[in-house]
Every structure is written in C-alpha cells, then in structure tokens.
Length: 221
Image (cartoon, rainbow, N blue to C red; front, side, top):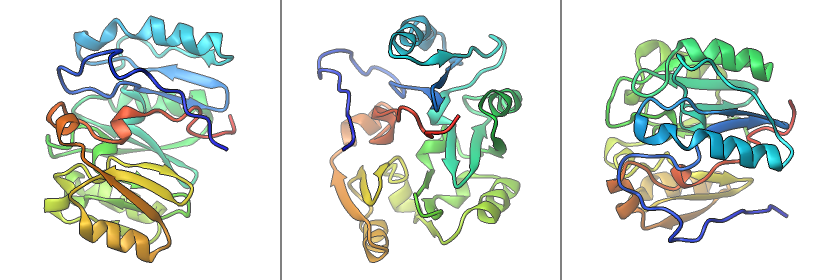
C-alpha cells in the first residue's frame, strides 16, 4: 500500500511556473533544490527541516549550483537522467551523482516550452518510457535511446498538454487530458491510465508530476 501525504488545497497559491516539491531523494538521502529564481529560494530551509524531522539525511549542494530536483532529475532504469539549460546547471549533475552514488547522464533541453525534464520525459517501471524527442538536443536524444527501451514518441500536439508530466505508480499512470493517442499506446502495453483536467495548472507551468514528489524516488541509497 502506497502512503500519500497531501497538502490542503488552500495551503498555497500557484502564481507562477513552479514545481511545488522540487528536490530529489534516494534511500534516506535528500538533496534540496537550489532554485534559479529568487521567488522559490525561501522554501529550501523549511522543506529541508521537514525532511530531517522525518528521518532523512539532508545533503546541500553548493549555493552557486542551480538544481531543481525531480523537475530535472529522473531515474530511468539505473540511470539518473538530468536535464539542464533553462533551470538547472549542468555542473550540478556531477555533484548529484557523487552524493547519490549513481550514474548521471546530462541531457540538454532546447525548447523553452519544456523547461524541465519532467515536462517532456517520463520513465516507466519496465525500462521503457514516453517522451517528446524534439525537446532535446541530438546528443540527449541519443543518450536516452541508448539507455531506455521501447520509448513512445509523443506527438507534438499531445506533448503541448504536458502529457509527459505524469505520475506513475506501478501499472497506474495519472496524466493530463489531451493525449488520447498516448493513452491508447500505454493501455496496449498494460498500463491503466487516468486522464485529468489540468488546464489551470498548465497555465502556471506544470501538470500532474509537478504536483508531486516521490519519497524516495529510489529506495536504495
């Protein structure tokens, strides 16, 4: 049984492009984000304190390295794919890999509409995934294809609904409405899909995944 921790709907307002819970956790290690925009910077100490109170070991990145957590760091198989350019710095990826003891592969995002990795790439538990390839540079596309299997290419018109910004729990996928072709392909692979109306959140720059954080993203440290 999965445990879900929820905030009441009036806890905060969404007034700009955000991922409410942007950090990354593996095992009991937790790395807070270093936000590029000053509007978010004040959140870090409060979030870190909460994680410490719940038994996590908090590791801080150097202040000069911008890193926006699960927004730009997602595990696919045993690889931590790290996006950079618009919000996170490529220099932060090596530090993250050393802290977590994992292989990190940097992939450049080239379309400002997809400013975080989790807006255009969604790994699945079976080693496959779905993504919008045009959001990545040529090297990033090759790197993802080399380490992932049976990728589903999302059509541009469906990618614009942030369909890759999905929450995946085992065989269940929660994603925004507006991607019927993607849903059909996922269902053919045995996934159960729940499409939700996310248009108001998309106006603020995010969708389903942007409203969540996995604790931890991977069990083993």
